[in-house]
Image (cartoon, rainbow, N blue to C red; front, side, top):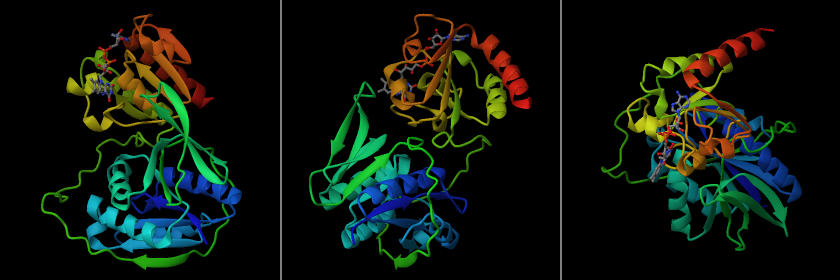
Length: 327
Ligand SMILES: Cc1cc2nc3c(=O)[nH]c(=O)nc-3n(C[C@H](O)[C@H](O)[C@H](O)COP(=O)(O)OP(=O)(O)OC[C@H]3O[C@@H](n4cnc5c(N)ncnc54)[C@H](O)[C@@H]3O)c2cc1C
């Protein structure tokens, strides 16, 4: 029977919330298409992940558990995904539009000569096929796209785009072990894995983000936004200008050449709103901008705007939020 396959991303022995979100949307689609939801887990020593997958109503879970998959490797991941897609031919593969899937899925798609739609923000079933809504031209417009071939569709979705699914019914998922004999190129190997030093939520998964621009003026001044982030349990992001100035690492950059985020609440402090920054955050549910320049382009996209100096506004916001949350 055809099915919808979800690629499961995991970290520190836990399924990422972005994958849980996709499992929920897969169930909604599967219901409309009268099919099942399957999952694919790649990694090393992933028994706990496989156990967790069963709680999400998955009928079958493909598991590629091998040492060279312990950290992300494009060739190993590409081989594992290709193997399952070729042998199982699901209706569609759903994956999160994060850095590893952006890297590996075009490779898989080209290898199979299939079609991929990336960065989806919504789905619908139209004429018995899955259609995906996606932003185009750096978010200037959106379009519904559909794959009209009989090969499985490969879709990636931005995080935080689907409502939480409450209908999961735990099932005893059938486990199917797969292994791939990838010949690892010396040109690409993981030499060291550096864990993020920040205790803040991962930007891609965060439901609240506070982001700052070049006008933060120094790395030390991030302490001010860190305090607000701690109160709001928010992720901390930066514009490219702030990153290029050396105030923040590239892992914090949001935008066309940084991370694409989609939180419920996005604070832009001293960020002008260049198109390349908007490309990474424009689909945030609520945008709050603070800028000294009332003509700054960010105000055209903000739901709430404060014309003011962030060095005055951020501490006031921090205090107000602290009080409100303590009530
Ligand atoms: C190919 C390409 C890719 C790019 N990719 C990205 C990307 O991924 N992400 C990204 O962000 N940019 C990206 N850029 C850069 C982008 O074009 C902008 O240069 C950048 O976003 C500007 O960052 P900024 O808003 O922090 O700085 P600025 O443009 O310098 O704006 C600073 C803003 O802060 C305001 N301000 C100053 N002082 C204060 C204060 N005390 N309080 C409040 N407001 C204040 C100013 O009024 C101004 O609006 C890219 C550019 C190119 C060409």
